[in-house]
Image (cartoon, rainbow, N blue to C red; front, side):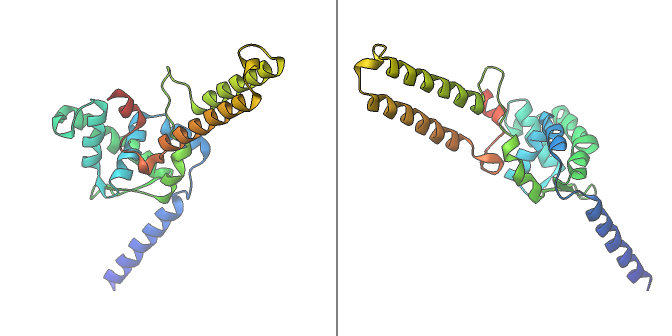
Length: 199
């Protein structure tokens, strides 16, 4: 009887924790979560290994942070990341419904909500244009070409308008193909974009 009562109590606790966990984080929560590099790295690492432990996450994140292989991570580097994950980052990711974290076993698993974060994860360095800025600039250049062709400004007036229209369409087509190729999303990325640019 006592065992049955204990089982019921455990089921109730699981149901309560599932009810307390939000089904989907708000946009503000997403931006807050992704503002921290270690949390971003944790999400990338989790989608590479959905059966990760806090230890394997600490190893991978420390390797990315120190730009080295996992085997070259020192115990001090690993411990710093491990402690931060355990005390701060993983509990926060769990509270917002992005992961399931079992402190006893150390198991960490992503939830379905993580797959919806792709749109937020385009990380752009200070020296780089974002895609929206790039397309805005490309549109401005295209408008300039149209005006130059319309006014007959050399060399634009010396070639047929169909040629320039083809050039503009080709520019947008190539840009869209490159954008699509590079926007593989979280699950398709081998590593975080910051790490890719560093290597």
